[in-house]
Length: 185
Image (tube, rainbow, N blue to C red):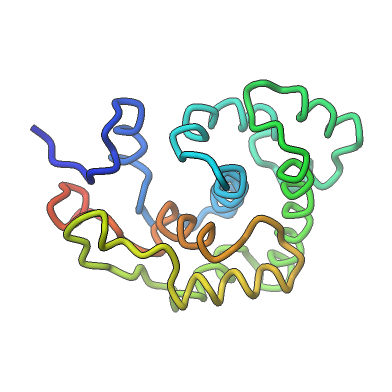
């Protein structure tokens, strides 16, 4: 029997937990994808977004920020009519705004990776989580990230969303110490 983090209770979560969550990501496209998905998740369960991930990839041109910044009103209407994604006008608008800001950051820093990982000095923070209650909702790093992203014009990037993002892209290792992935990532 594989020992996983207690949050990964559903079969649909196992693959994501076992292969993606907490693994350090340095690919700009994937970093952008996760930023959009974490913003879409606000107020919802991660499982809701995870089940729609493939549909999001299709709806958002595989998270190609260059294409997304050029979305027209017709594209916005298409997204708001797509039952495979979260059809929230503010979240759709935010995804387009965030694509624009993402490209600005890439230009300024040479890559989004270089910018976003600077909040943890380029290294994964390895927490010692014994049980789910030990997992923080925000940290000083997520606070700093949220503040800077907001200052740059990003939307749906509060500290709680930023911390979930940091977990997803491996900036922090919040696997429970008893989880088989804790030492691996």
